[in-house]
Length: 167
Picture 1 (cartoon, rainbow, N blue to C red):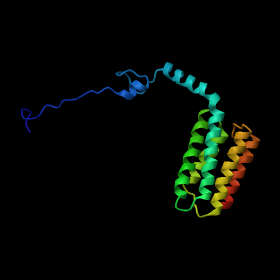
Picture 2 (picture 1 turned 180 degrees about the vertical axis):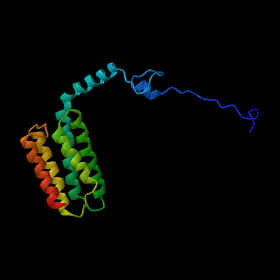
Picture 3 (picture 1 turned 135 degrees about the horizontal axis):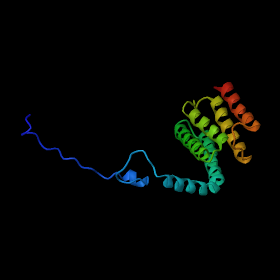
Picture 4 (picture 1 turned 180 degrees about the horizontal axis):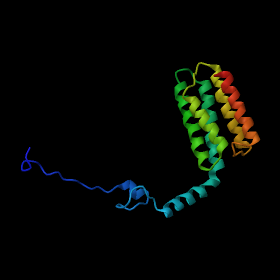
């Protein structure tokens, strides 16, 4: 194909709307977020920390209710409830990690990962899920944050024993 016969290619430079949402200029260096935008976002997150306790309680209640519904449901409905348990444990993990509640984050992640391999027919696996939910409630009620305190180690040991014994 000769240069004379080649069609001219027209390039459209579209506005990157995602850059605008992130507070970046339409044109400019990539990978740089204005520090004032980060500070503003962090301030907003910090203001919401007062709602943390109520929100965690709501999600824990939904998790517990979903677990009870799973136990009450037939085998046909079980995958739907396991997915809800997975999602609620992931929500807890995300919410608690945002405010550095490391122990609850640990349990949320552990339960989420266990949901990926749970065998709904095995009662032993039900014990493991219940152990997770129980220690999450203890963590919530006692307002434990650190995953390295003596109480935290004791609660993690409870779940570890359940997993080791019933997996």
